[in-house]
Length: 279
Image 1 (tube, one colour):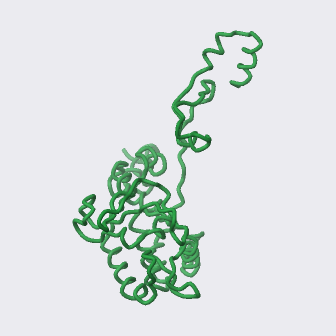
Image 2: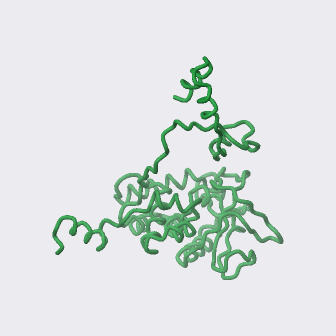
Image 3: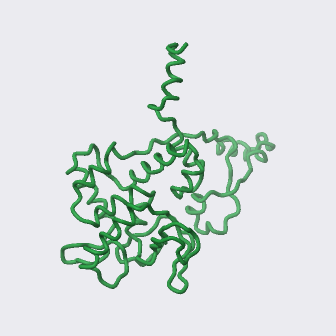
């Protein structure tokens, strides 16, 4: 539509309209990514005739009910149990999890980084991982005197720490090499080498089939389920869910997860009131 009117203005029709259509706005990250020199962009053309972009609620794919205990009964190794536990108790993405190095783990109180008093991990984006695993987001990080700081920080649960030590004292101790990455292959010709994100996805897919869970178990479903559970436990506070899940914005949390529990007493009471069942 904008192009049609600009063409008419070029033919001499209503030249004032051309001025009204010649407006610009700040570029989004997507605009910068598409441009050759996006990092130096200061503005992009705006179409005032375009319809407003309304909020479209997305429906994230959650884990099936009871998926975690079912998966824990069918996984075969301490490593796989640790993966299920870590994905369940955090909003870690599978690329960030399989890209973890041992130095990224600060599993004690008051670690040397000084950035989080509770046990936590630093998810750092690295280009050179042997298994090609990489974190999705790329906040700055650094290592000073052997201590990692920066990156994305995720707090860890006691169950995560317990599963870590079980894995490290059994399977990792028997297979580890000198690469320093957390998750390793436990068998085959590449035994001891870093475990890939695709291998983790395959493990979860097979475990889901063995457990008889509906659908295909994907790592990202853990992230959705964790955030939804945090939102419910916090009384639908999107700020708590944003911080706990390391989401980019409160708006994202609200758009994707900000929906009422359809089985809550408040929801049922509202329905019954509308239906005329409550006096």
